[in-house]
Length: 341
Image 1 (tube, one colour):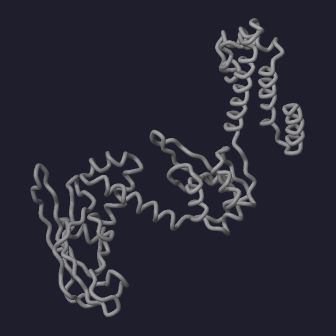
Image 2 (cartoon, one colour):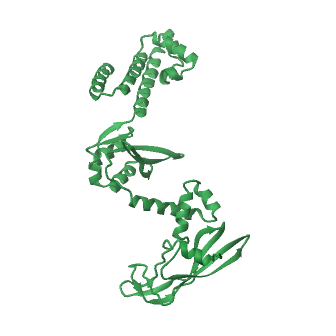
């Protein structure tokens, strides 16, 4: 059985009102490319590029090239001279090309092809592998993301997480996740970690859906807290464990530094105990080296503000083991009473 290229294309990429005419394998520098000529079907009217209604022809533009999915590893291009149509509603406009993405030099099929490979390769590697530009890969991913976001089911979202990642020197991205039980997915990405970054998410998400959010887990970054308070007033803002521990370590280090400066003026013996004690107090006990464990044992025998702060931090670890909210609240109240003395 002899299968022609035209038969194959009509099977996978049939376009109503258009015909695959001829195909040629031509040399283009050091590589061969496959060029496929298209033409309008005889007697058919084109669709207006503005209103998508049929209209008579006006004239024809110069031929344009649209990169298609490589066939057998050969760069493939559609070549077509678009018609301009005299639409009675919109006036003279270029016809709608069902395989094209506006004025971009790639077909829809090739854009989806690039977007799928961009999940496995870097955008630069994808552009080199398939002999196209980085801009084409970027626009293809943008098209796929826009398509997915317009069809995303946003019902039933009651718990969200807000975080940031460092992706370049001095640059961050703001991420918003859905963290409902059994449903974990990325909802939104915005540049920087400013109030405007998170505000963009709530504007996109909508006021009605934002009012249904019951829990938001975030760090203690003040711009995030300001936006959450304004756009999700019904949500309980939960601060994640990592940043609470980080704040405690900052407080202990501040107390240690201040107490060391005071002791440096007189009590030489105690000053020696605090020397090189920073990581003994800040690292988890299970991560201490043998020497740090010995130094910590000596520190615990002294009656210093730094040691009392350290013991309060270690005692707070029991808070994370509670399953009963009532008992957790009772523990937290008692712990705060001791810490505020």
